[in-house]
Length: 281
Ligand code: AMP
Image (cartoon, rainbow, N blue to C red; front, side):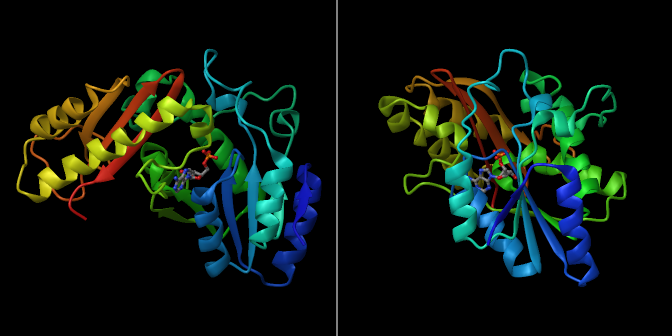
């Protein structure tokens, strides 16, 4: 039976008893509106952890003033039904005031990794992500935590935090789950109109073409990126960025090599979509 707790004290009681019984704990942080991408993380946690905690928290700190915090889908009953079906042990669903009570004033920052890709158009976003994930690590003290490669920059940043701040969590990054037509699953896909939804897979296709070109021997970063932009040009997407980067430093690559990542963000109508591909793996 999946229990939903909203307070830190209830969370602590449950975790204390599990730890007392010697159980290992897996954590899957989410913002809800769950789909198969989230559930793939849950299933992985279930296979390597004795107990799995899923957090559902639309973190106000990681949204900019003109972003979709208010509109972000909140469908708790549906989410809990999915987690119940996946036999998740505990859902942590705190109100914002439980995480950020009056007087809260401490944040986590990171050098340079947030100054690339999504961080450029979303100032403060990764500070919000780092802060909430460190809080969740401290609250749950998981043995392992599971994140998606779909949010590639986030994964790189959180891996770094885990090392730098000695969190001691086994951070696992899992592959992007996609629709049959290639579109990466995202809670934001539900914002797409039918015609936007029809166009959306062009992003994944453009990235797959870059990978195909790499596999055929193309090593020029500029040529790969031009190919991605060419593929997107006939669509109604506006490109926020397309870069090919080192997967750890997130610095742009001129000569690409296997393991580098082509990452892109586009706007389709009012919806921002991100996706990425790791070259040659
Ligand atoms: P979110 O609820 O969007 O904050 O995502 C929660 C976690 O699910 C993050 O670690 C995401 O990277 C991961 N995630 C989101 N979409 C996907 C996907 N399509 N495939 C795999 N993981 C995903």
